Image (cartoon, rainbow, N blue to C red; front, side):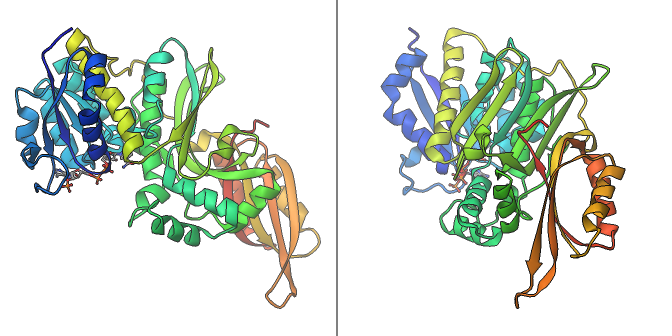
Length: 439
Ligand code: NAP
């Protein structure tokens, strides 16, 4: 057993950093036994150096560059976020031969190439399990357990804030605005919730998952993205009537054309999910990822996708792996990008759709609406029509909900444009995709 300690620098002492430092200290003996050498905390990078931070003040520093350059630091754990200053600190660490563990999804979805190259050049590890779905092991299963299989699809609920909001809307019939206000009051949504509710956070995670699953570099800019801000209480009522829930999904797929050409699709949007699909019952702030591989079939990973301690669990797993590699003299898997698959545009992706519209309550409306779907070769699977009344209880038109069979996004967009121009259609209230059913 090696006795030489492994020096660790932790950058950031916030929600996650505090828990990582606690585990390193409280579980020191177990970690040493698992690694074969003790972990020694050399320093903690923060903005505010003070003696009220629950750690010995002499460990704290605001000089990140100096900390990551120290000769006695072997592994740098980056838990500062956002992209900068994290990128600069990680690059400096890798260039000096330190292994790096990070939870920074925004950075990994943007700069994987640059960071992976630097890790490759220095022949060190770059691990980022905590960047996707918090405590849930999904990066390691994809890169290692499934390394001999071919992944076809990864679909998940990877943002706890939006899942909390959508679950509340489903459970209580609340509007989006009221569910967001409750989530903020309870600490599930940040003061500026844009990154979560507009789907940027989920898109970063989709880029990371697609890159790993399909051996192709995919960045956040390659991911088609729609957020949840337009999902209404009425959509939930319609979804319920159709036997569905509504979830913000991150979907990464390997598509095969008729000519056998492979492409990657990575996309994030709210979608109707049939209640018998495993993702439909993932509620509150929980995350889940369903992986489909050719030989393994369907696998599901479920658990806490955020929070200081759950995220620290994933960070610690990476830290132990990186430390073991230092002790035993090896490296974990490198970036695998050999497939270099092209990215499919959203227009070419076939899914089912739900279209909710207000129409005039008069004869012939249904056939006019159906004719537009037919003209654009979008086949209708189900239609529901209900009369509407104004606040005085007087009839004021009707609402039609159409569910289609699989159609391309391009065909559906053309259909919706044509519907909006029909004299009998008063409003297109919403257009959502339906995932998890094949017909
Ligand atoms: P946080 O609570 O905001 O903490 C950030 C820490 O980084 C603070 O200690 C801060 O120092 C330090 N920091 C920020 N900018 C710095 C700078 N320029 N120089 C030195 N120190 C700096 O963040 P967190 O929630 O722990 O998240 C950390 C990372 O984990 C992020 O990349 C996040 O995306 C990722 N992550 C978080 C979660 C989660 O549930 N929280 C889940 C998955 C992934 P001061 O304390 O002095 O301000």
